[in-house]
Image 1: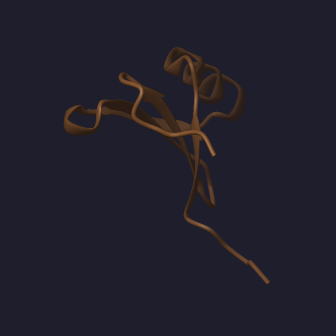
Image 2 (image 1 turned 30 degrees about the vertical axis):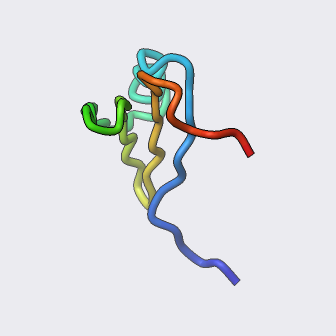
Amino acid sequence: MITKFNHVAIVVPDLNAAKKYKEVLGAMFLKFAIIEHGVSVVFIELENTKIELILMEKKTLQKG
């Protein structure tokens, strides 16, 4: 039985939409880029977990 998890990661087409989480949920968020992996990331911090939104700068993820 899962009782707690650290975060959930979601690949998204637009990181600017993360601002809505801040407005609607009152969440804090951290935005940064991981250049060597070709991604930009926003962590939305909620009370008990985090949502990680990932924007792919390059086509580096495989579907499946």
